[in-house]
Amino acid sequence: MSISDNTTTVLKPVQGTPEATGQLDDLLALMARLRVDCPWDKKQSNHSLIPYAIEEAYELGEAVQSDDNEDIKGELGDVLLQVVFHCQMYAEQGRFDISDVITTLQEKLVRRHPHVFEAETLKDDAAVKVRWDEIKVEEQQAREARGKSKRRLDQVKAGSALMQAQDVQKQASKLGFDWEGIAGAVDKLDEEIAELKHELTDKSTAEVKANIREVEKELGDCMFALVNVARKLNLDAEAATLTCVHKFKSRFGYIEEQLAVAGKRLEDSDIIEMDALWEAAKQHERSS
Image 1 (cartoon, helix red, strand yellow):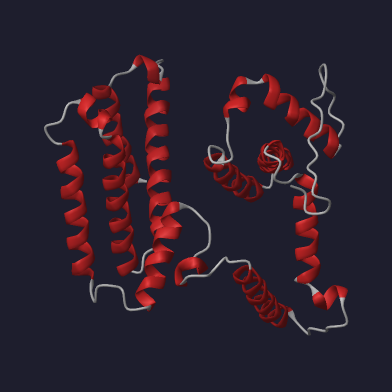
Image 2 (tube, helix red, strand yellow):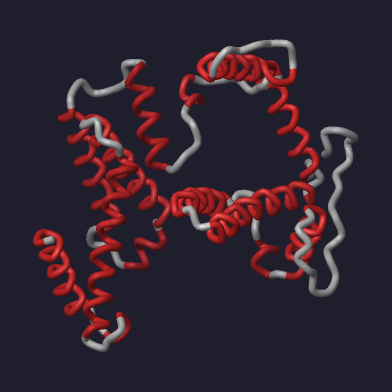
C-alpha cells in the first residue's frame, strides 16, 4: 500500500503505439501496457527479475567506463526499466507504487544530509562519512524497533555472488570461524569437489536432471570453497574470475578471427578445429 495515503496507484496501460515523451507517467503507462500484452513481461515476478537488475548494474558500469554518451543513456535507461518494472508489479500487488519509492528516497537523502538541509556543519568529506555512518546506525536501530533484528553478517553488502562469498568469509574469520592456514581451505575444496563428482559420476543425463537441485547445491559449495582459497591467498575472487573471463573472450575472439581469415564462420567449424585454434591462441599470447 502507499506510504502516504494507504492507496496504491496503478496507471492505466497506454493505448495504441506510444511516443517517446521523456515523461515518467508515460513510461509507467507503457510499462503497464507491457504487463498486459507482452507474454514475457506478464510472466515475470520480482524474484525472476533479480538477475536482470544485477546484470544491468554491471553493464551501466561498463558503459560509464567507455564514456560513450549513447551507451551510457541506454544503460541508464535499462537500470531505470528495472526500477519501473519492479514498482509496477508491487503496485499490482497493492503494496506500494513508484511515488512511495521516490518519497522514501527523498526522505533518506534529507535525513542523511543534515549538513546540507539543517544547521549542522561538517568541515570535510571525512566528517560527512562519519556522520553518514552514525545516521545509518540510527536507521538500523529504527529497523530493529520494527522487528528487523541485525545479525553479525548482515553488514555484508549486496554484490555479485563471488563478492558476497568472500566478504561473508572475511567477516566470519574476524569472529574466529576460519582455518589457521590455507591447507584447511584446500582440503575443504577437495571435499566439496568429491561430493560434486559423486552427484555426477556414473549418472545418466536424465538422472542428473532429476536431481539438479542437489547438483546445484554441491556446485555452489565448490565455488564457495574455491573463494575461500582465494581469500586465504589474499586474492580477490571476483577479479580472478574476471581475468579468466577476459582471457576466454580474447582467445575465442582469436578463433573467430582466424576462421574469418580462412573464409569460415564459427558455425562452419567443429570442436577439433576450434580446439586447435584455442591452443594457437595460447601460443599467440605467450609470443605477444
